[in-house]
Length: 260
Image (cartoon, rainbow, N blue to C red; front, side):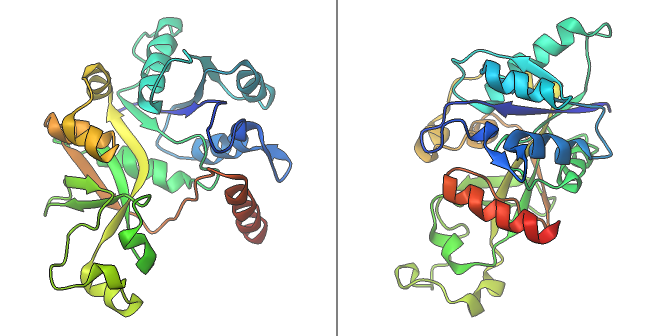
């Protein structure tokens, strides 16, 4: 199953405009994402999908592949779909991949093993989409609505994603917070936002209207569940820090400096 990575990357950001071009240890942030994801062993190519000429030129400048897309897209998934169709039009073999991996453009600490893991999930013929989850080890994450939680069945297929604590432990007083010592018995997982899609699943998914649960939680993956897509989940030991603010960028700089 040939697989490619497409990184959706836009210039406009409410909290941090132009963050893909911010310098991070001497390289633009998007270059870190591109190079780390590009080290995955199970992919056949990698592209940046952007709506900004400056980002396009920056990617070309460090030797990467980039595709210009519309500025009207409301999600990264819509952007990678447009990019995929454009890539296929310019490729002599037309269909360039069976599996498309969506790696967020603001995660410069993405591990290549994470890319390989979501590609490998697609060996299960029942799976339309593959993604990752990590066991929660910080008590604040349980009640933080910015940390998306996921529950899955015995075959590791997602049952639900939520910004609320799931599963909800009835006998715990959530308002009083959660003691770190109790986390192990909760067995709760946070969603790690990297996805692998079968090509036909990606095209179908982005053709569907927003769903009620998606609108309520503001979580795109709920549209997939509401439309009977099977999302396979693998538990990962890796943590990836998304850059949403200048403060996040400084955190990542410190982490990368220590590890290098």
